[in-house]
Image (cartoon, rainbow, N blue to C red; front, side, top):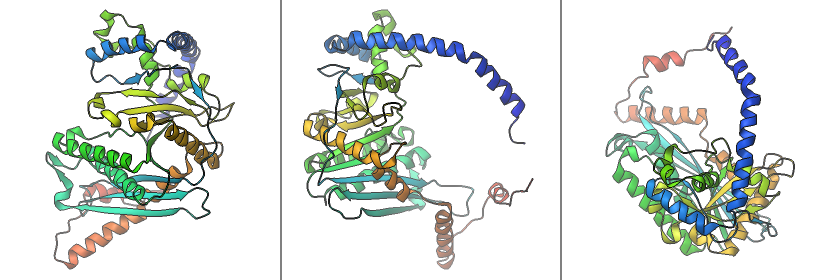
Length: 389
């Protein structure tokens, strides 16, 4: 037996016993958060003063930046866009495995181009990049999973740029997850900076094309507006230990904006305060809104990120808003942009494909007199047929 279910069951029973008290405490926090939201909704200048003091105490602070206008704004969508080019890219990867017979890695990017109103079938493509030998190392050592994910993210964005350069008319380019590049700083600062510069170059080229670039964050876990409200409650003395101050912990942005936004509505646009804000400046400064892609009885809140050049253009914001809702409709009760779903399906590397790549690589190395190792004993044991119970 892999799990001691008796121990787990005892813990589950204890969790159940405490559930009413936790719910009561959470409801009190939610009521307080709602009061704070209403109090500060029109006081963006005062909030920004508070935020500036908080930023001085912790430059890596991550929260929403209020822009002029009401925090509680709820914007209705426009009509579904016609004659629009939608592009999405997603990636997957095979990490180097020291227990395998051959050390290699692979980055796979799937992309889809959909032209609304054209009647044409979506165009799909796959780019597969095999990494071998020196490509499996960074300046600080072996390629880490984080460094590989960074390469995958850059490959996705390169593909979006390639396809956007071929698009005619209005174009929306989507990735799953934030626009902000999360990187393997531990994999080498110079390597991370090179990729960051490349990412910003791609964003600037997308801006020159007039494309709408956005990242779609489903079920977001970063409570950026709630964190802003927490900052609003802090005294100057509490600001000194801002990282320890979380008076609204447990309350989520999803809960908050489920009360603010009806089905199909989006929130006000916010700026994004984070440690990487110094890298994304001018027209590349990151912004976001929340969008309710759910129904009246089942709200579903997502965060949509985009650069400042999109945030400053009402036509682009409205186009993005309507396009995302239109893409979510085909997915029914579990709304998610169809084009991102298809890009993910295209990008996923199946186990049999992974095994085929390994066999091809081993065969070619043997034919060419290259070195092929053996699987580790650990991997060989894992590959043994499992006993039936």
